[in-house]
Length: 338
Image (cartoon, rainbow, N blue to C red):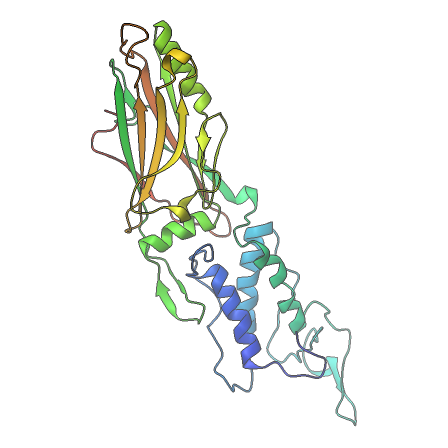
């Protein structure tokens, strides 16, 4: 905060810029959207003046963050060249809108009370409270793999099936470090930015055309598995699958970890399961592994083959509002479900 009568130092302006860059720029962990910014970087220490253009760039970036999170621009007024900038208010235009008396005290005539330096600093409490906040209408649901996609269906009798899907992030966006230097986002940065801006990966599986007791239990298991939603730091389900409530993209390692699992409901088939695992390949690629395992060995005598046709569906939620994140690509590893 700036006191009335005080000066705005380069260090204070630079603090604003660094905090904006931590949200909008390359960031780290849950910070960073990976977006090009309007601000011109940090002011040089000891600089006499912060220019109108520097204030305008900072205001543009703050408006972008605020709009992304709340669907509304800030109410901070635009600083123009020639303004006398106050702690809590500034003149609307230039020249005679500021009076200076014999004791060298300034009085702003008809001031803009949303145009002081402290109006800038007052915005940070809201935008830093939860940088992952995004207004709902800025998110789009997009289908990526459907049963009609090659490899996403299996229509023969089976006892164990698996499928692996690579989700590949490309990187390449030019943004800023906290210190204001331009930097190109890596593929791993792109993955972070996708989830930091509200990105989700959703998947479900279904079974059709079965017959018999075992197929009926598999059909029930598939239906109750629900739609699994994989986010930055958590996983949820619309069904009764067991999911890692505190597990998400930021927790991935280079080894497979369980995301969700569902077992058979009939006591005769309780060994059977649907399982989803995920790993991060350190090159901007997340691999999901889906396993349909018919582990039942026969109760009491015969182990029936599963004749249910299996389908896999994957979709994503992606930020595509004032801030737009480039979509990753989706591809089966190998031929698909097999």
